[in-house]
Image (cartoon, rainbow over all chains, first blue to last red; front, side, top):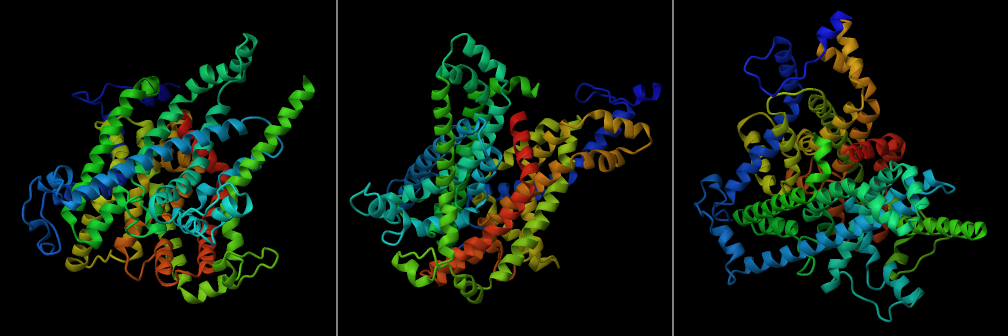
Length: 325
Length: 280
């Protein structure tokens, strides 16, 4: 028994001037544990990201590509022309892709989370086949994005596609066949499959959250005369808030960086209505060899996400206060 | 009252199944279309009563699908295994130990998720080219190159999965092992890891699913040797744009491996994904 109490890990304040040998051994062991993951992070994420941000300050294009890191110094002029030079065609390309990405992100995140919550509420009751239905409901999430893009591209076909067949020929909801893969509708052609693929995961997380809410809370509130809506508003929603917060955080980042669906469905230039930040950057960098410009847009996108994280933190900090303490 | 409740109950259950049908419809359509002769699909005709496997045979003959499939399997398995190994040791460190810089490390790990791939893609590519020219290390267009990159990609979130799993394991287990004369590493490998097996499996499948889906880096870092399935599908669209039956067949074949991996492990995977999320 005495040895056990001796060996027990001692909680200690961070970085005391003289750590006891056992504590120092524990710390050294922890460093060994994180070493492989840390090495990969530094080599694949951090150093290349620093290098990429540096490239955004250079005039790196087809002609200067051989010089690479020795390409002419451009300072902030890449950023300046992207953000403020309205005579530069790259500027209008950027503002267009930025507003498309904002719209895509808002609609996809809102659609995914509300759809996921709705289905989770529907599934959070005893019914025959509940477990099987929950598993099958996850199927769209398992279908790879590139298959989602190929499949929906086929379904969106104007004449042969099943969407128009259902909307026009079978049900008559629409009088005329819309064109989905050209023009304004292309935004919806990428938004809807994205929501469809995202809903199952949101449903899974919300359902786990709903099942963790004690039944007694609802029963007590019902006894006090609270109706379904009031119980949802004052019991369910507040208890789901941390799960909503986490999904908002990652949903926005994941959507803002969407590349596969527009790229596979619509090609390297998805057109003015569906061009997202990532398709713009990849096209300008690798088709047009404007590497400095691409790096600058990528850096701006990352800064925008940092701002988003700041907003998110201010809004949801209190929800995680007790979890991290 | 009870009769009315019963009807509401039946109505809600039917609605649930209707929603399920709507969610599954595109997947069913993918499968049904892959079983049609090509002439039909181009005209928008369907003969669901006479399925044929022709599209699969044609697709297999027209593109090097088995090469893409083998590449994807090797690369995703390797990356998922490495990511799970690294994430379990780093996740264990974050779950159990306090060390100087632990908070900063945890934040940086999450911070990597904020970096757009397009920002560090070119430097990674240039690094691979440089290594190929100046050292015997060939990473460009090789399996090992993509495995290393994907390992780095999917380790960060996996660390948080594994941390949640380790936090759920009682400390007393390791303490008993230490008392019995185990080293710290021995206690981790022989006592903690076996108790976290469902978490390891969930993490592996998570990394495998995401690696299977990766397109951006595969486009830039492969040429002809290590091309994965998404690249194969892109090439196929370029060459056989109108062959929708074969395209759908390729879609089915690319989905089957991840679908099997998912359904075989979904009990643990669902537990792992939700445990990580519900605990925050």
